[in-house]
Length: 488
Ligand SMILES: NC(=O)C1=CN([C@@H]2O[C@H](COP(=O)(O)OP(=O)(O)OC[C@H]3O[C@@H](n4cnc5c(N)ncnc54)[C@H](OP(=O)(O)O)[C@@H]3O)[C@@H](O)[C@H]2O)C=CC1
Ligand SMILES: O=C1O[C@H](COP(=O)(O)O)[C@@H](O)[C@H](O)[C@H]1O
Image (tube, rainbow, N blue to C red; front, side, top):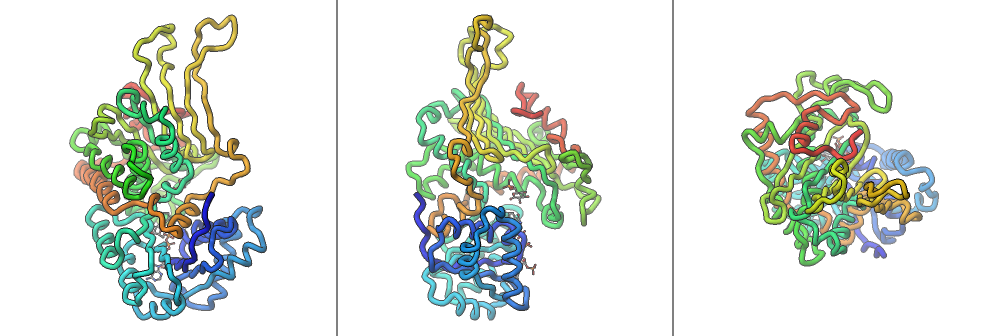
């Protein structure tokens, strides 16, 4: 049972930006609708766009109506939500504007400052909040990406740390707010069945796929400087890998979980030299088809630079140098403009040690645990059984033991990741947020990859929009005698 959050003033910096309008206000609305916002909680939309507050509030409402499903828009809840919400004109870089902001915040005991802005201004906002006397009662929420490499992430983190201790810094990785991602912790540590098998004695390899159907969606300016490795691997895929690979924490506290994740990050084998070619594939989509519709290639997208060699796809084999995972590859892949939106983790168990069935069935013999993060959230264990029927003999078949969340919990709506994360910040719980050292170790691992790519100077491999990536990403795994699970 969720407890209602304590009262707070939620100050949303960058309130008229894409993330705020598309994700954050709808998530706050859903929390209100679920009666999880305290009656005294207030929401301040902060932006530098001048003009009438009513005009901007109206724009927020219009976006709410666009991004909240119509069946969930309730007049009563909307009225309550609007009564909590105010627009404040602030230039985040102008210290003087914070005097006015502090007045609007008033005596609120807890302030949540959510930075839906470029990371370059996080430090200045923190300094201005501190100068306005707000730091002691404020939790700050930082959006990803924090920097674009280890050095710049340290600059951002250090600038924030001058004014806010780590226990009041909440670094968002929205994948950690997805219900099925949290379920990984329940699955692993509330079921002794799995934990006893969770190591190199029983697991042959692990696949993590985060495929996106969309292309760049008007974000070329941001994306082209980042690329898929920085945008998706450094954060979401590495976090998923950590949750799969970490040792059991001693307790369910933020630092116990983060300590275990950091051990995994430290044990990640750097990918350098020849391995950069054999273990990593960079791709860039060219024109193709998405849902039967012709779509342009990356270099033909709006505002593109036709010379760009930024990758929109990455597949790689990661190895973890520790006792639990020695010899167990983690195959990661993620890309834009793939055939479907699909995030899933597949744990492949080893074959039984002694094989007694017909030789032609041997390839099928391996249990798989398939954790579908989105869409159709589910956990399914593929087990071997005998085909039914007198005519079948000992013919094996692989079938699922399936837990589909929308069937199993039929009445419950699966909340968006941001709803969970905003609620956790309001409750002061850092379990689902990323600590400074996690970000930095993840950057360190990615930086050496990027440096290797730069040195080699290879162009990304083309793949047609609507495909599963360059052919070499298939070779990457088939070379090890395996294949990506379920590709069609
Ligand atoms: N959009 C998304 O889906 C995702 C975004 N993020 C991260 O979230 C953050 C916000 O992203 P997004 O919403 O897309 O970006 P936008 O550019 O759409 O929004 C950023 C907002 O910050 C405002 N801003 C910047 N500097 C100042 C300033 N000095 N004073 C006042 N306002 C300022 C901008 O105002 P103005 O328009 O006037 O410049 C803009 O409204 C980024 O860190 C991004 O990396 C992370 C994951 C997904
Ligand atoms: O952080 C990001 O994530 C989205 C994908 O998120 P999802 O919840 O829709 O899977 C990605 O499109 C975006 O480029 C990236 O910045």
